[in-house]
Length: 434
Ligand SMILES: [Zn+2]
Image 1: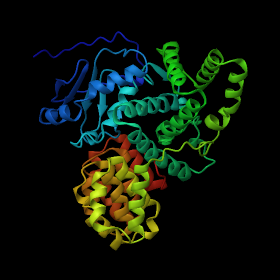
Image 2: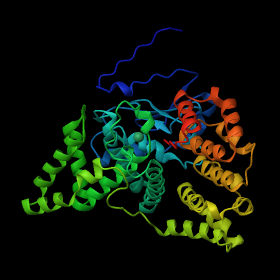
Image 3: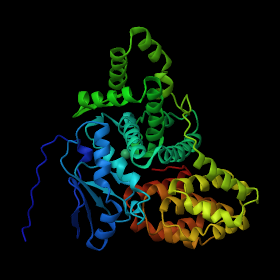
Image 4: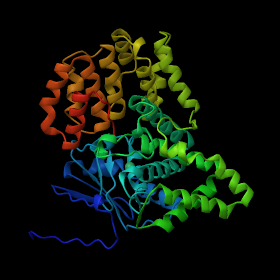
């Protein structure tokens, strides 16, 4: 076997997007342009999980401009990979956490596909402008999700993530510069400021702009933005002036000025704190999930129907259900948590999105006490920071010595970025999520 292989990339890419992987890997074509890569034992499961990858790619392409990169390949990494995904062109890296076996986390793959345009084609010129990558990608991800899975599904996802970011902003503090869409690092490592804020506040801002000009114009704007800035790195001022020009082209001077005068760019982009205007994504399903959670909090849950209702929920609705319990944690004692766990058969849940949220409730309520066996097993099996950081935080608040011992046991398993993030919560008690 040759010890050399060569690879030529004819499309310009950013240095942070260069990625190399090696291992016992096999590749399987699952669509015209789409492939999955994993260890041989997993390839069947992975190919099945992402059997619609080509549809996702085609839909994102239909919403934007032709896909530039030829093929799209999704590589499943070992479980220690600290992120859900990383959008390296031609070789997206993904955590096995997004392969639960029931296609319930394919939206992460759609997010990475959306980076083929936002991030990989038009790139932020520094990490202060990170939302130009992530906010726009989240916007395209949700449009694609809506067109494939429906409006309600998209809204539930947006609601869950927007809720997460709301608490992140409060955790940072409303005056903290890292809560703005233009964080200034002053020597701080950008990883320290990694949060959902550029994703979700950025998404909300774009949804707000869309509400002013309408969806057709918004999508047309994004297409001309992509064509205009392809293969370049830009900052927010490029975006603002291009958007203003576009509005002037499409509307009469009076209307354009009226639209633009409504947009408080300073408040949305430069100011810290919550978004100046709240975009609401409530749906009937969302209200059902909250109502069910509230019925447990009020000790009025109908045991026979509760399980059936809960089982009908999507992963994100389950996430919203559990988040409502987390928001009302002071009411949830160990008995109530045990009752909810048994009634809803939460031990059967396989998606990490549900498991990590439930572990927070279980630990904070005292249902799961030190030595936190199931949490220990969970954080030792997956290194995705979104899941493990809040679980470590909950264990730390409950029993710091045991939490530290669990981390010491698993430290060698984690990626260095995750190790640093976990050490940070031990040393500074700062909540970081990604
Ligand atoms: Zn992203």
